[in-house]
Amino acid sequence: DAKTTQPTSMDCAEGRAANLPCNHSTISGNEYVYWYRQIHSQGPQYIIHGLKNNETNEMASLIITEDRKSSTLILPHATLRDTAVYYCIVRAGGSQGNLIFGKGTKLSVKP
Amino acid sequence: DVKVTQSSRYLVKRTGEKVFLECVQDMDHENMFWYRQDPGLGLRLIYFSYDVKMKEKGDIPEGYSVSREKKERFSLILESASTNQTSMYLCASRQGDYGYTFGSGTRLTVV
Image (cartoon, rainbow over all chains, first blue to last red; front, side):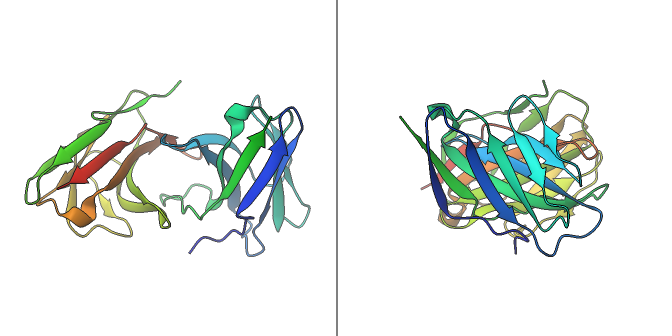
């Protein structure tokens, strides 16, 4: 079973920031938080990942709470093309194991 | 950018046929994965490989086999296709702790 909890769906107005929450209360010290998204009929796309510190790249920012039990993915200026299912996944660093995808959050960006 | 290429976008096969799904990555990644994705069930891992000629069963390996003769190519084989194998098949590759890169997927219909 997935080790994360996400809302089933969210709406966001175009041009506004989209803040997608994720709970991972049983996360272990060596587990990273990964975010992927899947636009309809395409393969999942890697967005960002982090261990303890907040991370930012050209796509998004990842804010991880100090106790690491939850995180938020921020899309600073959402566009219609950001409409997708967003998956939050925890995975141990250095492991050979696979990603376990939960159901994710369906983000709908509206004009 | 890493590219993961799946040989077919759409495929229709008959029950009982042997089906080969091919996946090629161009960045010398060690780890490669095959998932299937079904509505309401999310992504489920079929097989993965962390080196040439190495393979590991995922969560749902029954009815499938894999082949990894070269580092860049990971093939999924349906020995005798059945209608319950109608699905979207996704290949992915990964190097170390970096994110997975997924292909665009193959939508297989078994009739």
